[in-house]
Image (cartoon, rainbow, N blue to C red; front, side, top):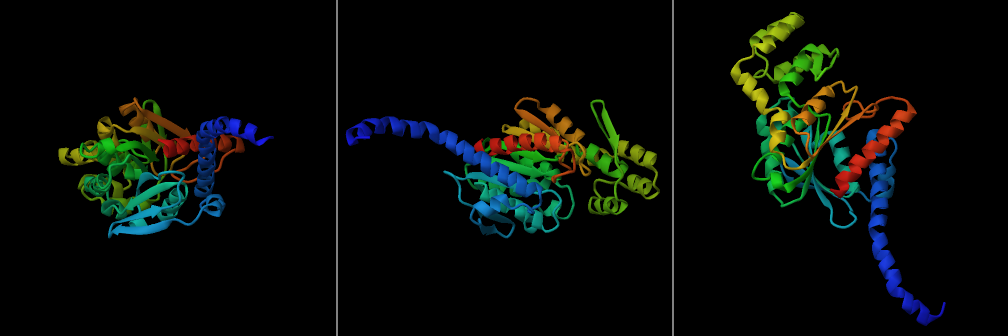
Length: 329
């Protein structure tokens, strides 16, 4: 091709590249999202994302929070990762792996230690460090909560001082009602809107939860639980004092979600052993507008669960689209 002809075509070529750039970014974003999900759900046994991205940098923000930064396409997106029960807090191995992978996927990740949840205690005060970190920069923020970390995440996202900084809130295996979740942990029973079921819990785990949450489990409930009297536990729960009921209400995302302005995405496994999927049904029903519910067969609590290949593929595509939406929010 002659030089003058090349020169004439340069503007058209430049325009084509400009128009193609968003498509190319989307392709790369989808590829990173897929690599993240595969590595995360396999517990790191398939290191797809690690193989193609540089190691992120971990910085200590203060004694109770870390920041993870990787190499992003364009400006990195701020993401606050809110843990559930994690005895080591921000240093919990699974949380460290998740934060590192999210940073490799292009997020600027902040991970706080929540004192109550580090001890297995449900407390409204755990929302305080989440609010503080959201206030530390203007955003927009993506907030990702895990399990019962939904309580401080939703409380913070509803806080009038920072709620406009949160663009999307993604909750994995969240609870909606603290009272119903307490009932599930103590009796194994769950129900919402015509859906009901039962699951047997490890008695040692139940005792550990009761010991850590004495303000939530009164003497009558504890006595019935010790005696193995499920009907007695049910009766005692229904007779909880107004003070305990009020505390449980404050710890319920169904109450906070009404004041959340962000888009909300709820991801829950049908066979979740820790928090029943009916809790996401309950939470979605509390604010249907701008709330998306994704129920999966091949995810347990926040890990992969066995299932037919066809379901795994279908669930994988749905998770890919969820994570891609988080990256592009």
